[in-house]
Length: 227
Image: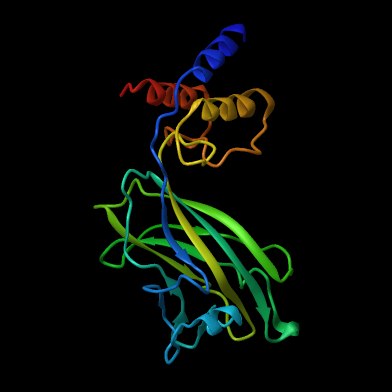
């Protein structure tokens, strides 16, 4: 344990490694151009978004989805998507929170789903805010799109989109502040020693499916420019 804290102190003396995780895309009433809303006859506008009319659901054979413009992953190993919106209930007796839960998908340039995440709603609150991450490791090439959909929703329930922010996350940026620093080591130690994950965005740096001392080693090497 003593050696761990000596190492931690030494790392705090290291300068930050500037590997900025830039904002890749933003969708809100003031920044929605180049986003594709697959709803026939609808043209996105500030008024349309601000009135909660960008709804995700299925109507017969039509899927109403929101698709990002073409993005470039750069140095990112994952993307972090932050969402704000509302669960709309058009018929309260038939509304089901689970059916209105969104699926976030990573699409390659041929439209194939490379990775996906289902974010399940377990309550019936109206205001929705959540964050999910998707790995870019299986993406071929640098360009991709992100699709938001509610494949199980219908005319009785839908998820309206007000804001979506997509950030790239470089491997080793455990706290998601945009750079790899000794702070990322601190967050990992807080998790390994105290099970404190309050500041952690992505602790599985080596991608083995768990957070261990091996992840500390990877970040340490990144700070020293090794590997």
